[in-house]
Image (cartoon, rainbow, N blue to C red):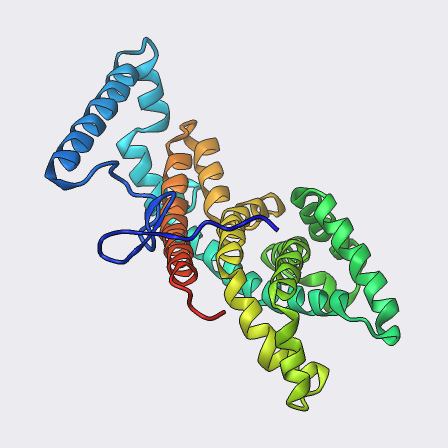
Length: 304
């Protein structure tokens, strides 16, 4: 077995890593002090100014600004005017948020159930393991938009009474849940497999049953390990709620499309994009925070 080099410590006793001091992660500025901040700020301003000048001086800049960044059209699309034949993109975003929240709760539950079934070793569970494996393979392989079409147009055509008379948003959420649960179940499985077998043995030594050990010993540790990748999946989920608009649901992207078709201007799409960014960027930064915190704990030798 090859020798492992001991960790390098700074003068302050802090572990040194390939990205600098442990716990700090990749730094925004390559150097330290006010000089680095000034140089970084100046270079950023120069790059942004160059990009703005390139855009402004381009031959078609005026046409692009009028078509995509018209202030009046952006404001009109944001507030909406049903009498004029278009909806508020800002108000329609609320449907995206509700679909996201409902789908997230259902995905967490369904994906966990699928992962636990696939991890089971009991012969009685064999049929369910086969079904869950087929489910994961199918819904990870079929594009989400095709799943939305199949659920949104296929289920109403079955004429199953209550099941076939739901709104487009309900069918959209169902399609999102089916598709994303297949991916998230694999994230759960990775988390379950990351828990050391000694933890399972410890639960058995305490007289805990398999399911009790899974619930109180394995799952808490597994979930902590998979929170960052789960949040990354949910960032994608928030964006993909816009696909439900193909079923006719008036969410932000659909409202932007209706405005564009009404006034022949694409500024409404820019408004929708900005609103989605306002939702996803905070979640992305929160994910980065959790990853950095977990990295600090690991480098500091915190117990798993």
